[in-house]
Amino acid sequence: MEAWKESQLKQLALAKGMETAYPMLLSFAENLGFNYCGIAVTQPHFEKAILPLQINNYPENWNAQYEEENYESIDPVKAHCLNSVLPILWEQNVFTKTTEIWQALKENQMQHGWSQAYHHEKSGLRSIISLARKNCSISPLELYEHYGYIFYAACLFCELYVRSTPMLAKTGQPRLSPRELEVLQLSAKGKTAYEISRILSLSERTVNYHVQNVIEKFNVCNKISAVIAASRAGLI
Image 1 (cartoon, helix red, strand yellow):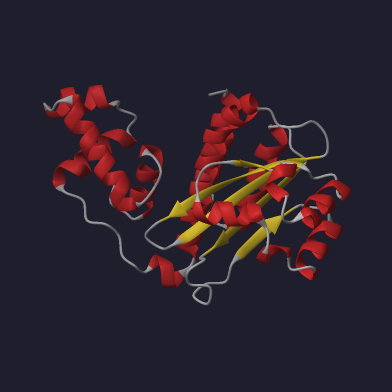
Image 2: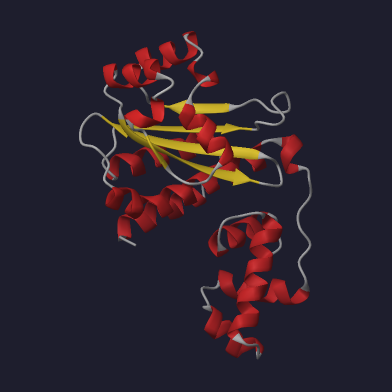
């Protein structure tokens, strides 16, 4: 990972609220070569349970038209993201049944874009990060290079939203076994699975098994997120 990407993602992981996290995400998107960046968090199966989040720097005309024309109800990109964590490019063939949305994207110079979702299974939340720019289509190679970063960012925003929403945060913290806690504490110190296996006299496979259990218990996307979640919960 390039140094600036690692640095910005670490800052994003430590953000305390949406008001500080979004500017970091926008800066990251701009450094990737995009003019526009949006984050949406919703709970599709429990629409009345939470207040959906929408933050973006899209053109005012686009935001107004999207709301006035109720594009949300027919948006194929959103429909895809609510049901899949695979990235989706904003291409003309995606909008064959909603040509008015594609035309509006072109009029606002936003047709070169893509969206990435993360699904928080425990809460039912869906976070969607969308990036767009005025010129230059997005190649498969570029999408491949950026996918992991944006998926991780979507995961972080979803976790941040859960922590900042009382009715979601009060579900309780997971219970870790003594061994899982040991592995997590050593991971927090920067130890690799191999190093932890030597320290605890375990096989590397067993260490990875405990790490995966912790990731699943915290319902996060990787070891770094698990360490951050455990730290914020006061477990390490």
